[in-house]
Structures are given as C-alpha cells and as structure tokens.
Length: 156
Image (cartoon, rainbow, N blue to C red):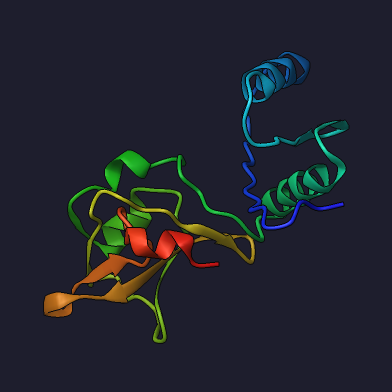
C-alpha cells in the first residue's frame, strides 16, 4: 500500500562495462545503508525495497532502456556545455540529439544558448532532447533552471 503524501524519485543508471553483480552489491550497500527515506532498486532480475517503490524503480529502468522518459545529468559531452554556445555547437559537442524551443519547435542551429552551466536534457522518443525557452536579446536558455525558486518546492 503506497504511503500517503510520499514523493517518488527514481534514478536509472546505464553502465558501459563491468560486473553487474558486483555493481548491484555496491549500489544496494550504498543506497540502503543508514536511515531515512525508503529506497528501492531495480537492475535486470535484481530488485530490493518496498513493493510500491520497486514497481516505480522497475518502470524507471524500463523507460531508460527504451529512451522514452527521464532526465540525463551525466552524458557524453556535458562538460562542453558551459557558458554561451550556439545550438549547432551544443548538438555537435554532446550526445544531445535535438534542441527544442518551447511552443515553437526545433531550435535554429545558429541561435545562441546561455547554458548557465546547467544542461539537463530529457529522453523523448528515443532521442536526448534539450528543452529551451527564449530569453533576453533573442537568446535561449535551458528550460530547467539551476536554482528553482524555493517557494515552488512545497507545491505538489
């Protein structure tokens, strides 16, 4: 039975190489030791945690594998996405597939993106897509801000 008023967050990790059993043991130890919020993990046939949270973790893992949902934080080329760069540079220098302007469509490759050193693209339709919005002087900024307003943290 889900806990009332509980927020669910899921973390999905893609690994290139390695011993999955060893990695599983490390993750379980790191994330389930100590007290605090209930944690669930799902990796292949391995699952741990409360049933309702395990289901959410498994759904996040499936969405990640399908490239249909989720935010990318560390990805190839993220270190190139600092300062002010063109959309063309953003796409050529990272694994981001598309840059979209909210309510407009795909961004013009010549447009300038002020990254604020905080670029968090989302998986959508098998592509890594950065959502942007227009800003001062005809520039673009990533839709997700690096420091969201604290007043919004309590809104559900």
